[in-house]
Image (cartoon, rainbow, N blue to C red; front, side):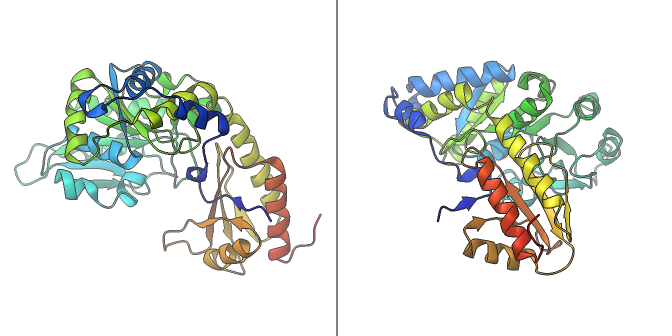
Length: 348
């Protein structure tokens, strides 16, 4: 029986065509700046984001944390949303590595407002930690792949810049937002001081993310990457996958979004499930009665469908399913049918 893996879009594997591009990649020592494929990927990424430069990094978490280290100094605060990836699942690295602490704002499904940011920025008083950075996340993972409304993001950016604060965007899935809205990705990131996006999620690469920003920012980011142990050698083998993905795997994200809508529509017909309407490729639902998320995920695993609890201890009946290039329409229909049977609902 084939396994349907809906735990995350990080479980994708390189296509045969991507593997061929990787095998044929020209390589050099990237720590010396001599890997031609990596340099080309960084040029393409900067062009797409409308920035002066970019830096290839092993992971999205490293990209985010490099940005925090570059934008802040020890003893400052970083404004983040309460359910953001940076705050919840990056191992408190902002404290470990940069010596800063989060200033947490509770948004509406992952999105906070400009007036919340304005109120959270500390005045210049000697006994208060100065605010050093504002972080956004688009799409917002824990909010079910929600797209940060562009006008709201620009209002936040304007407030931050008026107070002399930089803004970093965790854009791990920013291409999902671009495809869903029909807007160029550089339009969605306009105004931020740095942006990170992942290659290893919906774009289907095995490893890697890009951190983009101004020339001086990227120069400093390269130094911080080395300090974090992120200096890589003949990494063009991985960069080639990124180049292939940016050329061939962006538009196909629309298929993932369509599959997510099909999945959500099917789940919505099952009594006892409350389903969040998906905006991109992430479907979140809650079980009103019956098994917990952990119990249901174990039962699904036994039948060949992998899903993940998404409640982080506070919502024990919440499950997340993520569509990606490894998921077909038939996989979605099979998953819905299996959930109907597991939850005791006759097939329609």
